[in-house]
Length: 351
Image 1 (spheres, rainbow, N blue to C red):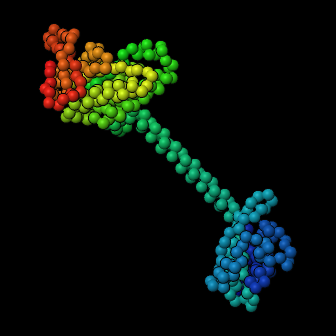
Image 2 (image 1 turned 90 degrees about the vertical axis):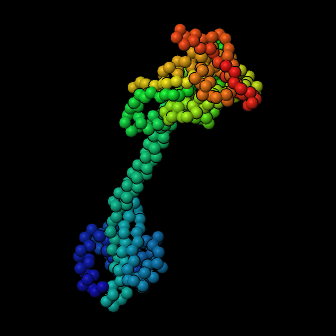
Image 3 (image 1 turned 60 degrees about the horizontal axis):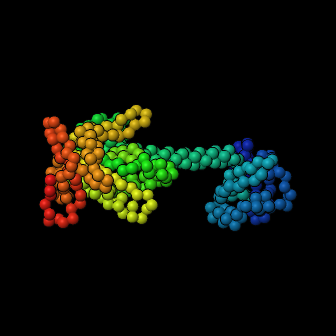
């Protein structure tokens, strides 16, 4: 770079700190007003390294000797404020001495903006993660309230259209002496007990393809065949019912609170839909639910009652016994059928 070029660069360097550096001694030969304003009038004998302690002199020397140019950044305190400058060193090629032109540009504002952008990006990322977590929590809550197919329909259209499902099988369960248990034990203990029991029921039902529809205190209702059709829906609810009672029996053997349940299962049609606008819940209702609830009322503690349609679909895979009292309908009299796990596979069903 010629002296004329240096002068031209100095003339253009308004608002830019400029200095001439002796490459051999690393002393400052010249400083323009902006440079002096930023860095002050240093000792004439001061070296470049004294002014910029963090500057890598060795890297600067190598870069200037190899390519004639070196860029870096430096930060320093200026009147109780941190200032950052971009430093560019260019070797004066045609000068009689090894002179380097140092141009310092104030990039403090740029760095502040970059910092603000980084902070904003981090905040957006945190908010995005928080929104994602909240969305997952809402989805998990909704999936606890309705089957996934109904949830997907609700998510895409905002409604769940009422549908008739036929045939399906329904399981209804309630606990014997529930009010007495509430009076005898602390409410927190009862809630914890129900949470454990219903969670176990959910796991058992899921294994056999049953969807829990709702719980209401001591009442538990599940269905197989809603919303996705299932060919062996009767076998699914029968298996779940038997294992519900088995689980309670095993639990009672090791827990102080003894739970006895009665179960009714029935096969038929139901209507499934989301009920409510603000406090909504997916519900099923119809002949199969009504029949299962009615049959439950005839079940003895720790037994299962089923209707004839369900028994026919089970095709002898469970022990079936007719029991009294009889449930009579004027047009279609039926007996109450007691269902239990078959102990000897070779035995035939008894109705």
